[in-house]
Image (cartoon, rainbow, N blue to C red):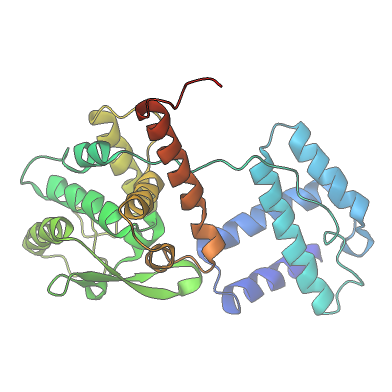
Length: 293
């Protein structure tokens, strides 16, 4: 019976909230883990069951961020059931999130970005494609899912922009710089030579759409070859895009629009990040910065 309620919830999230396949898989996994732990009929679930699950996840080594996400899934699930009249109340509503430390997103310096995006050198299809991917992610600040979902019709190189399908299928127009346009034009030429009829913009040699996993591997590979230490992925380039825009004087609301954030609060993390950067520069440069008293 519980499985039927989960299916109804996932159907609602897909049709009414336009949740992505990735999000739906995460919801299902969270709910299956919860009911596997509590082993209690859905109608008998109480607040203490939720708290017990949260405590168990934390004690088993799961991060506070992961546990907070699972609690959010439970809130949404029981809110849906309560609204539909399947349960009398939402037992997850009053359960507090575990306190988490806010971590500033990592970003690369301008020199590191240039080193990364210029690393693919060659004229073969794969190298030209990989260079175009790196240039585009940094030039437009796209999510890896957005890059993977691009179609041929989404890319306008004549006017220099891409039409992006973001979270909850919300579309936005994002301009791209001349360097990215040049790299994409070279890729388009190589792509046409493959003579593969497919709507996907970024493809492999066989004409199949490039997956999110493949795009991540491309970024990781060239970051390693460029000698950049630490974990670097597509999201690092997206953070670098936003940070460099802010450092260059871009308005926060413009950055919000370009990133596709629904709320300005999601974008405001970059103000804190930039202040950290400025304080670091001050400490290293100002004659009185380290003077005591």
